[in-house]
Image 1 (spheres, rainbow, N blue to C red):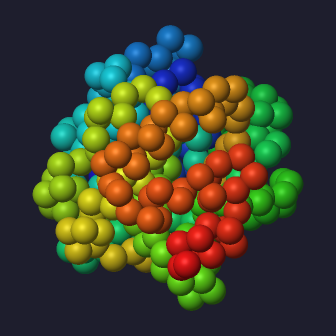
Image 2 (image 1 turned 135 degrees about the horizontal axis):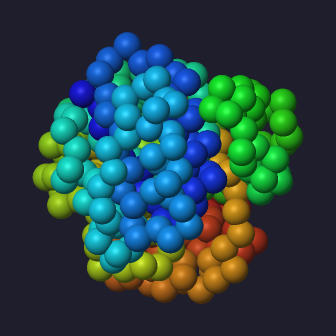
Length: 283
């Protein structure tokens, strides 16, 4: 069984779109969906109750989050999951038709599967426009976004690096970068063997998923990037993004004194890029 773990907090509109897109798929293998609600106060529970009778796919199980940050929320979902494979999916990802099947079929004991992501800069307006749409209408609208007919869908620098490494266009300087918590699956046994996400990253944004990736690859993981597992991120503002990221980056570097970790600001910092990062790593 594949267990889809979706952490959420105060993002009812995007969560509804994420769950609707998932339910529109037909996965040939059994799966479950867990929504880990980390204390939402924006009507998330009401949204989930309304969806309960509308979605044809397995009804999401709701798990209470520990209010200690994204790493702890994902770990809580993993503990409650019943599947042998864990898919961590964020609450603002629209998925393609073969998404669940691609993750479910990547079942080898050491395979980490990352679904490549694109950004949707027009997401806020799109969500407002479809906020009260019936499920069938929302599913059709989400499919148009994923197909690229609702606006441009650029890749961020991290996704550009992951896809370039997968395609052999650049050296695999950081294979663990494919462990992006927004759309990545892995065997439960491997996840548990390395201890799950590091909850000491706290409530700040960034790096807790990449840090898990370093430990997974040290334990023998290998990455695949199946195109069928692709998704679209409903882009949103994060005013204090870079301050939070800097603090978490400092912890990441303290835990793993590796060149590809120390040089991450060349990739993820403001103005960073793939070419500069790879060049610095291979020097």
